[in-house]
Image (cartoon, rainbow, N blue to C red; front, side, top):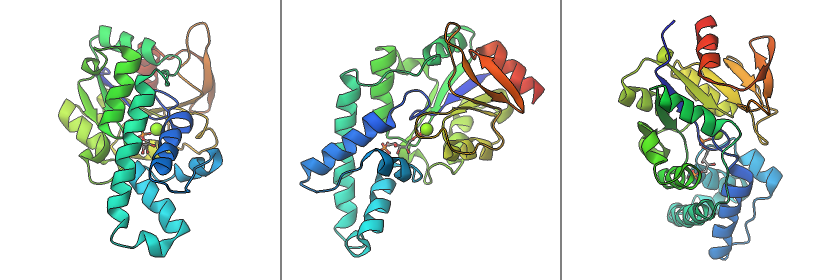
Amino acid sequence: MSKLQALIFDVDGTLAETERDGHRIAFNQAFDDAGLDWHWDVPTYGRLLAITGGKERLLHDWQQRDPAAAARAEARPLIAELHRRKTAHYVRLVAEGGMALRPGVKRLLLEARDAGLRLAIATTTTPDNVEALLRATLGANGLAMFACIGAGDAVPRKKPDPGIYAWVLERLRLDPQQCVAFEDSANGLRAALGAGLPAVITTGSYTAGEAFPGALALLDGLGEPQAPASGHVGQQAWTGSVDLATLQAWVSAA
Ligand code: XBP
Ligand code: MG
């Protein structure tokens, strides 16, 4: 088994719990700005997360509620404008310190960087959102920690399509067996596996009930030494904090 060369992270739900109290709030603010009586409550937004990509999610919801209106020529520009406003709200919310990294994320990023591994991002979200989150949580040099950031419309099809992972692997010039992907959702896992990557799943508030066939490990987080995560690696129960030695052992045994 190859020595690990890179860790590739999903963003929303994996680096931080951004969906319920971040993206959802920003979408609702954009609806208010536009004078629309649309509102995505917590369960509604949870259902809509099955559709990856904010613009795609907006169109899908509109099509469900009012197919005739969503089919009009004006629908696409309105969605683009709503999404532009939503991104501005989200970036501001994050810059104001509204989102924290999940436990263990910063520890693992720093350990991997210091060990000479490369770090990358493969996400469906808009690049501005990634930059805002990395800057707000890791400081001014946060972005520079990552060798490659694959985000949003860099590829024509969003997760569960594997395209964004293939895009990142191509730029890293690595084989999937030299990397581990980190995801929180079934759509994300399908994307990673589709690109041939082993994937560690850290479930979150919206994804804990999903099925994750083929995951290298299925955990409730990355954990910290003083606050371990728990879950399963294959059929085996596991508890601990995920570090590089753990990851290398998992991929070697897989
Ligand atoms: C999650 C997504 C994104 C966000 C919203 O991406 O599907 O659409 O919900 O961001 P991931 P945008 O888990 O791959 O990070 O509105 O910018 O799409
Ligand atoms: Mg995610």
